Image (cartoon, rainbow, N blue to C red; front, side, top):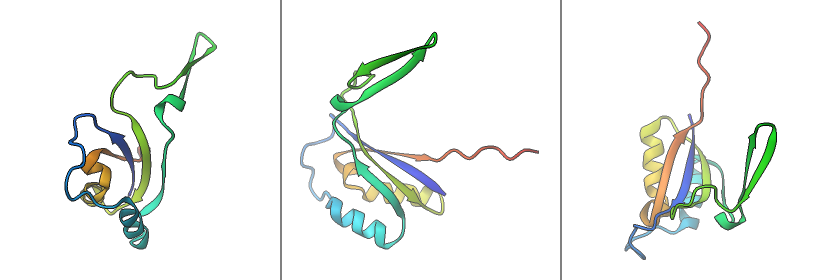
Amino acid sequence: MRYMLLICTDPEAPSDPPGVPDINEWVDQMDRRHVRQMGEQLAPSSAATTVRVRDGKTLLTDGPFAETKEQICGFDVIECADLDEAIAVAAQHPMAWEGRVEVRPFWTPPTPS
């Protein structure tokens, strides 16, 4: 099953917590295990453009749409047997120690009956 790991900052996380794994080692390990399908670091939220269409008009907002201290700073797409394995992979991600990692399955449409 495929999962998206949304990698987020966390203003409440302790700075420089001890024992944080190295991101390059995590990527190498997940690539060797064929768990990680792809991933990228994102530009800062200040570079974002939010697009909405209202009453047929395209509305643009520069920067993040939501004014929050937490920001999405990257993502990884992983393939795991189940949610338990995806959580274990996410718990090894360095940003789980310094930020937050949201684990979300890709949507599977319902099977017609």
